Structure formats: C-alpha cells, structure tokens
Image (cartoon, rainbow, N blue to C red):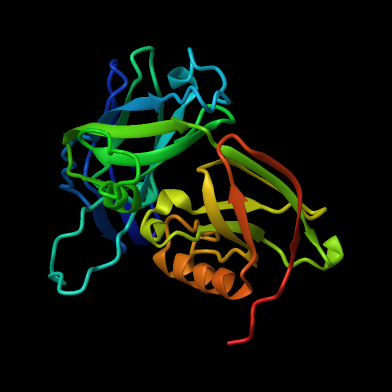
Length: 302
C-alpha cells in the first residue's frame, strides 16, 4: 500500500472461498511515522459457525399459525456479536477475542431449510446473541437452547436466550434449538391523552411479563416502535399477562437504539416503571387486541 499518511492503522485480511466460507486474520495495529513499514504478517484462519434447527410446536386448539408447510423456510435467525460485561469475580486479565474493528458488532443471518435446519457461518470469535424472527402471525419464540428443546414452562434455556453463544476462531458449534410455538397474540394500540406532536423522540412501547417465573426469560420481553401518529403494533407475543408502558428508548455509544432483550439495566428500569404504573394487559392464545389506549406518563425525575 502506497501513499499512506502518518497515523495509526488496523490491518486485517480476508479470503472468500468458493464454498461461501471465509478466512480472516486477526487484526494488526500499525503506526506509520515518516517511514516505510515492512515485515507485516497476516495469518488467515477459518471463522466459526453455529448450526441448529427449528422446532415448531403445533397446537390443535389454537389453529392460528400461518404457512405451516413453509414455516422453516420463512423463519430468519440472526446472530449479533456483542461484548459481554465482566461478571463479578471474573479474571480482569482474561483474554478478549481479537477481531477487526469492522467486525466488533458483526451480524450474521440464516434461514431454515426444508429439514428445519440452519447454519450461521463466517462468525468472528466472540459472544453472539441469537435473535429468531417467527415466519408470520400466530407463532412466538418459546425457547432457545443448546441441546434438546425445553419442556413448556421451564426456564433452563434462559441463559442461552439471554447470553447467547460464545465461539472461538474456527469453532463449529452445533445443537442449537430454537423452539417456536403456535398461539401467539397480536396487540394494536395507540398512545392516548396527548397530542402525537408532543411525544418524545425514539418512543417505544414495552411489554414486561408479570409472572415472577418469567422475569429472567428475555424472550418474554417485547418492544415496538411508536409511529408519529401514536400507533403501535406488537406481534408474535407469547400468551400471558404483561405490564405495558411507553418510554423513550436509550441509545448506545454507536447511536443505535438499545434493545430491552440485550440490556439487563434497561430491563430492570422499564420493569420498575411499568410495575409502578400498573397498566396491565392479558393476552390469550391467538388473541388479537385492537385499539388499546395506552396513556403516556412521562418518567419521574431522578
């Protein structure tokens, strides 16, 4: 590379294989200061992958799920890389996977095949949250686990849904199970008691599970953007009782709206606000609630 101005740079290499897989090198930091820089070696290595399958649970009593025959081929699953917080007692010197800056928030996606299998590939090392998107109304994601699908009502898969899956360079993780169940509810409504023009920016409506046993299950937390006219739609919701509240969504350092499923502090704050307001909604299997009026109450000053 010629004509490089003085400064600090990150170098990495990628190779695309005919199979669709990729090789990538760890990043190298290089400082240019008034002279040529030579002798840089970049070592290519395979990237990781996560393989899994969808399990669709049909309920003859519900009967509201659509496109059963092609459900797997219409179900998307995302793997979103993130940097987990250091847990209390963890070794502060523990090695953090080294990836290029461009891959720090890497996202991969896959779709199911006719056998209900999927593969998330070309993943740089690190931790990934698994984010499935049901194919249509009537379905909801019940559990995400490594190994056999969890029985209804159990919370053993909460850690996988909350913390995702960690992969090392070149590792092939298999056995991820995403269980999608029939009987999802749909909620439509609008913010009431105020003019739409006075609503704060980035306003979201949040559904928080009332049942104590669901407090650690991030799959039971839902959010939806509120449109400029104050209307909102929350789809693919597991039946149950929820606190419902509208709050401005915070942004992370990159300016992206923070997801309630990905931020424990946000979940705790929204839960506290929703519980204090005590606005609840109970959703039955396959129920479609229309025109729910949700008053906007501004957060109390700290």
